[in-house]
Length: 211
Image (cartoon, rainbow, N blue to C red; front, side, top):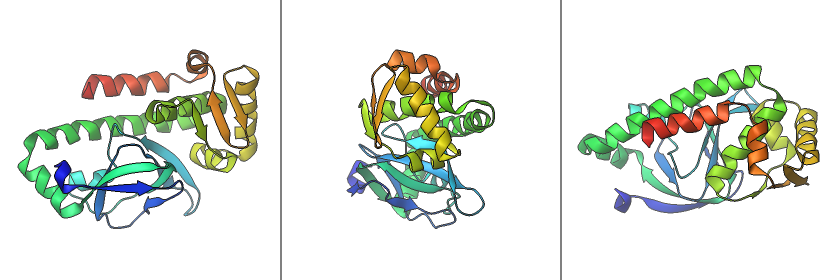
């Protein structure tokens, strides 16, 4: 299957797919991080998923649907393995093990999406920011990242001032260092203690279903 993929480099803020667009490829991230966002009022996007080397981008094709409802936005520059829609569908039809694996991955994504909806509605911004930073660190495998206030506010669905207050609170607690979009996680255990329970629930779902 890898032989039918091509390696593609992405820069931050690249848009892989727009909502309503036809899916001509799927991407298997290797080093790139991709945020999946749903449009709100036709403009601002709310992040509903984050994909790194544990997953794939373009999952509707695994269900036989060639249209995506989400925007796929590169959060962190890196590479992915890209495969055309036609060869991907061919692989699914002729590789039952791959089809079963993607079914399990789709179940995990659906479960995490439901968890994310509840998290956005009920949990405080500080706890959600801590969760998001941990999720990003897991996929980037780095304590350092560059994320602007505007991007975080959009992804978390809050005003910029809310993100600023949450980031300042985490910094005062000695959990992160934050300056002009550069974030360094200083205390992962402490950050996990602040994060909402959704972070642990998501990890457990992935471990239980995909190992």
